[in-house]
Image 1 (cartoon, rainbow, N blue to C red):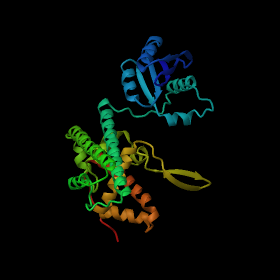
Image 2 (image 1 turned 90 degrees about the vertical axis):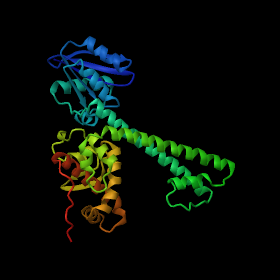
Image 3 (image 1 turned 60 degrees about the horizontal axis):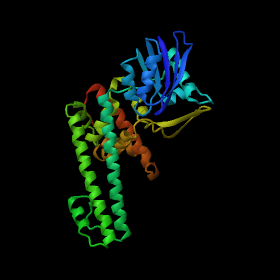
Length: 339
């Protein structure tokens, strides 16, 4: 078995090949696309061979392409590789050599590579989140327009059909009216596009009973459940539910020194979209579930400054509950509130 370490970039990649004994066999640079990198590796490396590279944008496509040729493909976690090789010198060639050595030693800190269908689902979830953010931007610009003109809406929910009609009928200066019309068109366009994406997501998750299972949790709707399932992919890859909080980066940073442990802000590792959706669901959950409300109030300790800490803790709890429900197949059961 030959061992190939690749430091992958968009236009130039470094390749280090080790022989069966872990000794350097060949190294070279490839200027060009990933297709050229794969072709050069295939041409220069004796079979059988294993390949390792760090996860980055498009790592799933590269994994699938290499897996059709190599005996083994391992995708390394970039942060963990840097912890193993804490070097003051960082060059593409050195990085490729490091990956080759770790591959030979069987010490690659691997990341999970989801299937092409799951990767497409994740991309759709992220695409919807981008559209939602743009729609929020359009709403904020319309609010700023009204505020700048000193106009207050008599309609509480401005973004309903009645609110939009009132907005369009406002008698404004020609230039302000032009801005208003453009923003209303933009807002309606995002409404339509989000509905189209929602239909695709619902069609994709239509046969997945796990969505209905997770929606039994108070406050958890379709989009939160679907995003969690798509990113979890296979719950069996987590040895326990505590790892799910780490995966989604909703656990606090921990600094232990001289027998004292200090907790900081959450790590924010993993998919930010799921963290955002779960924290939004937590606000609804504490209104609907007495037990979750009690958990929230216990953490907040009657201090307004602890609201974010408390809602993040509830979100962390919900993630662990969802993971446990996927493992057991059990529906949500409300815990009796203790006085």
